[in-house]
Length: 303
Image (tube, rainbow, N blue to C red):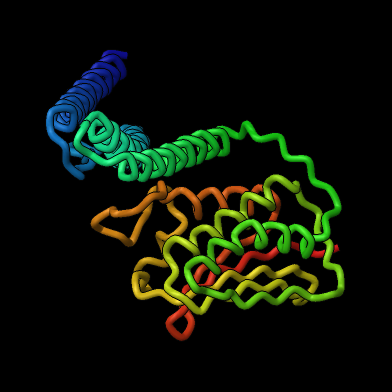
C-alpha cells in the first residue's frame, strides 16, 4: 500500500511539474504575443505574429490573429487609397469651379472700367455668359455623378430605337462641329435596331461621348451604329495626339484627364458618367487606340 501511495505521489508530483512547465510556457507565449501586438500598435510594418513557445492551441490563436491583422491591413490600404482619391477629387473640383469663377470675376471687374468701349463690354458680357454656362455644366455633372454613385437614379428601361436616339443627339452637336469647319462621318443603318434601355440614360451616354470627342478630338470624327452578334454597337472615334496606351486603363476614372496643364472646360467626369450609365443598363464600354484615333465602343444587347 505504501508503495502504491509513493508511486501515486511521484506521479502527482510529475504531473504538477508538467502542468507548471506548461503554465510557464503559456505565460511566456502570451507575453510574447502581447509584446508583438504592442509593437504592431506602435509601428506601421508588415510584421506578423510569431510563436516563441509552441504550446496547446496557441498556434491556432496566432494564425487567427494574423488573419485578422492581414484583413485590417488590406482595409487600411483601401481606406488610405480612397482618402487619397477623395483629396484629389476635392482638388479637381475646386480647380474646375474656381477657373470659370475667376474668369467671370475678371470680366465683371473690367466692366466697371469707364474707359473700355461699349463694344468691348458687350463682348465681355458674352464671355461671362459662356463661363457661367460652363460652370452650370460642371455643377450638373458633379451632381449627376454623385447621384449615380449613390444609386439614386431610378432607371425605367423601355424598348428604344437606338438609331433614332443616336441621330437626335448627333443633331444637337452638329452645328458645333460645322462651326469649327469639321464634318463628322455618320453611319446609322436604315434598319431599326432596338435595345431595352432608359432613354435619359442612353441620351446622357451619347451626349457625353460626343461632347468628349468635340472638346478633346482633333479631327477625323466618325460616329457609327451597327448590329453585331446580337448587340447594338455604338462607336465614337476621333483623331487624337493627347491619349496614349497608358491612359486607356484610367480613361473612365472620375476626374481623369490627359491634359496635365488642366486647361480645359470639363470636369473629367463625362466618360465616368457614360461608363456608370452603361453598366447600370447592362451594357459594356471600351476605349482603345486605332491608327491614331481614340475610339470608344459601347455595346447593348439588341432585341
